[in-house]
Image 1 (cartoon, rainbow, N blue to C red):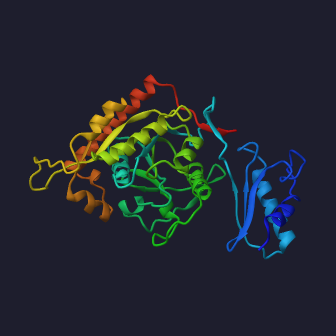
Image 2 (spheres, helix red, strand yellow):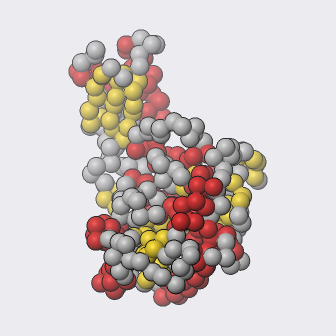
Image 3 (cartoon, one colour):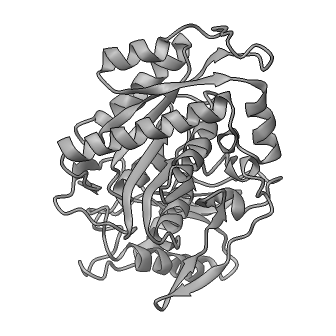
Length: 367
């Protein structure tokens, strides 16, 4: 194993093209080490958007292999943005032209049915006559392909105006791209944070979305690099928070709302959806059993001063339909009607947001 001193000595041969000095001297190398996986290098550039980062990474690989031999294993070269600050860009840069509204669908915790809501909301919006796209941004746990009965779908690459684009799945009236389309569903996605973020960037930039009224992003639960990547890459029109009536879910939903409302991000909250609001037996459709508590979502919406978009009940068909790849929003049923009503509330909420608030701008990372 090479010592840190030996690795730093090799890295001192890498010259920053703009500054004319080596990356060790200018303090760009935060730390470097070697373990059983190979050599890892962590960089902390003066500017997070340093245009020379890609070429510097490539030169680092060459320098290490030159110093220690061509068979030297390079585990990772990462950029640490720990000292960064988030600010709003003055000029919005829409890298998904033709998309009118970008909607982030988030939850404070897992297990609240966020993806079920995202898929069925997208379909309900399409059934109402809207042009809709859906990005499964839950990179490490993509379940959209299963819910759409498309686990074997593999996107094609097509040329659009001389540029390679990824053709989304088109099913049930919506356009869909998911990490699950690119990996074996039986394999675990073992990626570092930057890899997952870069994958999301590619889906956003290379997706052949065309003209859309709404592009929905089904985000991972909690708050993560993926959330930050989204608001950096596109101007998000607004966020929708999914919760259940349980107190533990409501407490985490507050964190999700607070993240989007923070003064460094400032993405408006379109509203809150309460999923699993009550259980209704198919044979007794008028009966409601409040298994997880009653109207907790409505109370939280009032307390946080956000819109309450509606309740989605629990019925057996939701689970069965999702497993079969036939989302309940397609049906004329209790749940199907609930999603149709929800779609109407979302359309109204977005319209109000666009009328009363200025357009959201992308978040930029700076020192």
